[in-house]
Length: 231
Image (tube, rainbow, N blue to C red; front, top):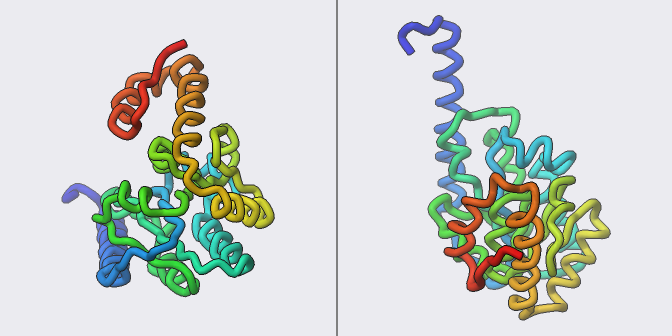
């Protein structure tokens, strides 16, 4: 650090300072958190990262996704909250104000049906008590499916996720239809788990996704109640 130029040092101090401000503000917003009775949990992605951009396409703007869910819930007149949980890595890794600043959290707070969850909140507790789990793509959706929960996902990459009660969202109409289906078809955990098991066997264990082969068994052995078998 001492060998860096003065301009570089100023830049580093500025980014660290911004990260501290955002972290403290987020913590302030969540220090009186109470888990609602009915809610959808939205897990934010760390950014910049491939899972959000380019895989999310236009939905890599996560504030847009949360706002879309909020509008759909209001349109359907559903008394359901959106619990938004920040990715803990966002405050540990390099801060990029192009994706997060204090206004990002202020905009979420302005929505009439959103609540921000503490960073140390157990994600499995949020998943298990939610009506469904939502994100762009990634492991949070896999974890929810493994626990028998419906998922709402955004972006081009999520179109490859095909199991029971997995809804790939392109627009507000698709989202409204997904929400109606989730509310109407409750207690379908077993169907979701079985369908997800088939998806894993077909797409991961016996496909070109060889890089997932080692991690799949460790992750899903812990999360799931079924055994993944090679065909």
